[in-house]
Length: 107
Image (tube, rainbow, N blue to C red; front, side, top):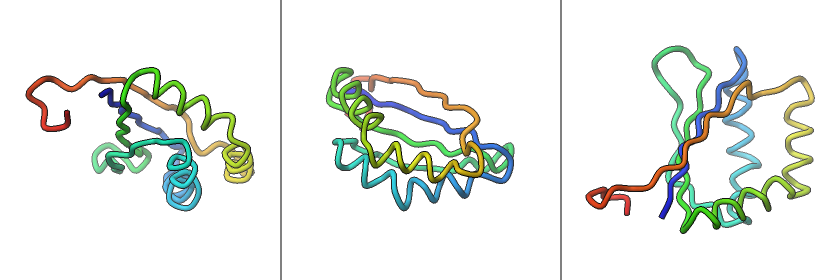
């Protein structure tokens, strides 16, 4: 298993827009493409502009395939266009791929 930790940094005042997009649109698209979502969090320290989530994939190749299919999905392309009509809602994405240690409960 591999895990992907993703942090989305929002422009000032736009965190609710990212959260809403995931809640109302993106999660369904993720499910269609086999994303295994472990959890979502907002960051309490340092401001109100970070959304963090953790994904799990069977392999690096499975992750690559899921992301490729997601990015090409017509519903995602339209969703992004609609939800960013008033400007970008993500300033930066920080993505880290991780492998669990042998003693991790998340194996």
